[in-house]
Image (cartoon, rainbow, N blue to C red; front, side, top):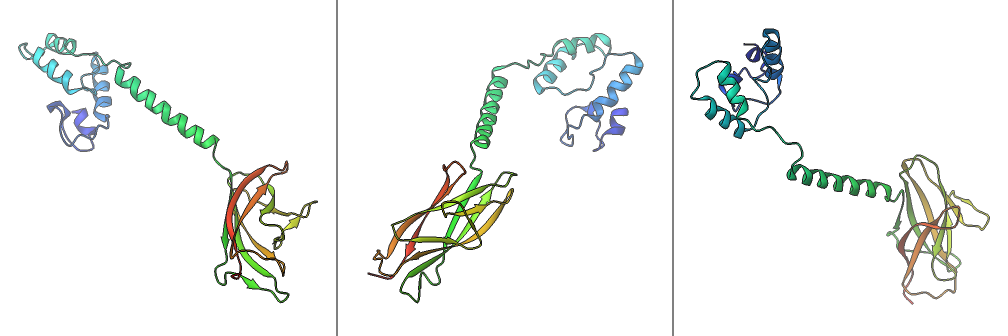
Amino acid sequence: MGCVHVCPTGIDIRDGQQLECIGCGLCIDACDDVMGRLGRPKGLITFETLTNLAASEAAAKPLPPGPARQQCGMQARTHLKVVRPRTLVYAGVLGLVVAVMAGSWALRQTTSLSVLRDRAPNFVRLSDGGVRNGYALKLGDKTRGVESYALVLDAPAGLRLVVQDAALDAQGRPVLTTRPDGITQWRALVTAPPGLHLPENVPVTFRLLDARGRAEVSTASVFMGPKP
């Protein structure tokens, strides 16, 4: 009764497979412990397939209870083959998934730049006749180190970029510093001087350059102005 006493659902696994069984295996440990103390072979209760159960029952049914019946039933079982076409297919699929995930992690973009243009108002007319657009910049960093990037504006000649509270490098470009594994926010202003004739919508691109001058990430936006 050791297998019954340890069963969380209170079933007698000796009666065969039952719906209440949760497959915890406590009955297996209890039975093997008892069989070991009695000097009998272990494995009377074990994880088994329905095919082996049916074959064992059919082979042992004509024999009376005893060691010969148990031995006959055990010999009728088919031993599990670990390496089978199905396991090879599963291993290949799992390996492919792991490779894809590892490649995605290795090639992931560690820096992101989000640019949101002010919409209320779309632009501001300055006292000297110039036009200014405001942008909210969100710089994300997925690494644990602090990085600094120079912000460059790809736009028609004449437009001037200013980032509030940002230092300038030797070339006069705003320098944005990241926060380890976090997001930093910056306020950028793009100004068109008076007398510069531009369309109502002008495509512009914000680019982050690393210390070597290579583009790390870029984000497109627009510069709004009055109708010509």
